[in-house]
Length: 70
Image 1 (spheres, one colour):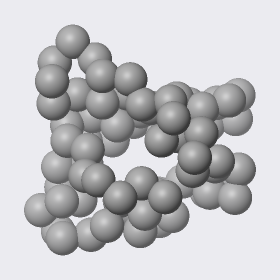
Image 2 (cartoon, one colour; image 1 turned 30 degrees about the vertical axis):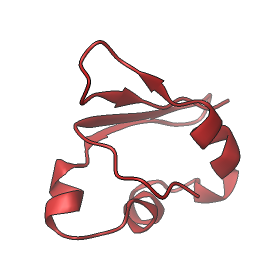
Image 3 (cartoon, helix red, strand yellow; image 1 turned 135 degrees about the vertical axis):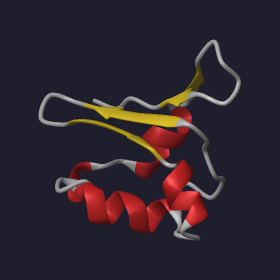
Image 4 (spheres, one colour; image 1 turned 60 degrees about the vertical axis):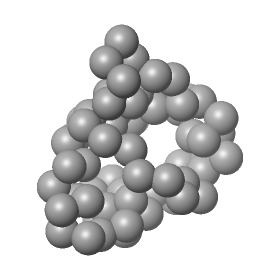
């Protein structure tokens, strides 16, 4: 499970899902990333949490994270 907060843009993509959202609002509302994902991604059951954690790549901007999964 993702335990640490990510800032700015978080990108999820696979063959059935492309989702982009600023989670700054999530952190401001004091919601966990897990809750946010479950509420906003319909295919939550398809997500492999360990694969997501293992796939984190930092973009050029230090506050921008891009996560992709197959």
